[in-house]
Image (cartoon, rainbow, N blue to C red; front, side):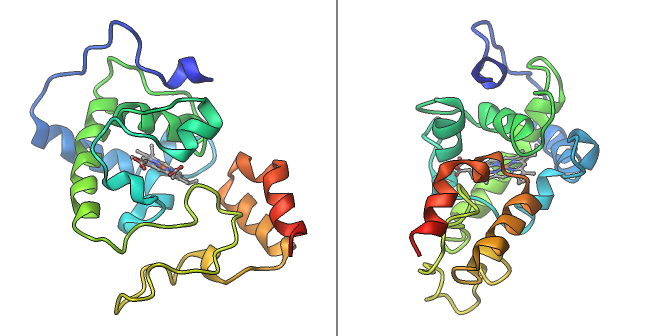
Amino acid sequence: MRDAVQRPDDYQPFQGDQEDLALYGEELFYDDTLSTNGMSCATCHGGLSGYQATFADPYPHQVAMGLNQFGMEQVHLDEMIQICMVAPMAAEPLEWDSRELPALVAFMEQEQQRFQADPCAADPCAADPCAPCGVNPCAPCAANPCAANPCAANDPEPEARYAIASARAMPACSTGHSLQAADSR
Ligand code: HEC
């Protein structure tokens, strides 16, 4: 798994006009044919949703999904995109020398800048959609961007958690971790 998402040794990022690449990357962001499960990046990340606070940090940095599911201490942005391709999108990673990968990188860099400008955008439920979300760090904000988050329905019944989990197709939810969370209530 890890080999599929980690930069190859001879990796040379595609060089091209960043504006053009970002426009193409935006198209790909909404393209559900990139996945095998009908999802696009925008299904989870539209309107800057679905990220934890780490997204605001310069790359490379540690991301919970990269560490927990792929054993990677740190990820570059292109590696993070490959992780989301392989895990939530249930697809093959993009070719490292493709135009698609740097296009998504260029667009996600723009999304990162918008995210950095919006301190309330971070989703405390992102890494583990099954985690109980009693405490909402977005509460002090006038408009609550977490309101549309299924996790924000504080502490749903276990069945509801599984429904949320399968709706988001997160394999991590079938581990003991979520059972534990349900049991500890
Ligand atoms: C089913 C939902 C889902 C889909 C679809 C999805 N992602 Fe993600 N993505 C996540 C989750 C959950 C996280 C948070 C992971 C974490 O913080 O551990 C995340 C995090 C990220 C991050 C930020 C990681 C960080 O903190 O630095 C980037 C960048 C990203 N995704 C890009 C993409 C791209 C590009 C696509 C489409 C190719 C995509 N994602 C599709 C669920 C998804």
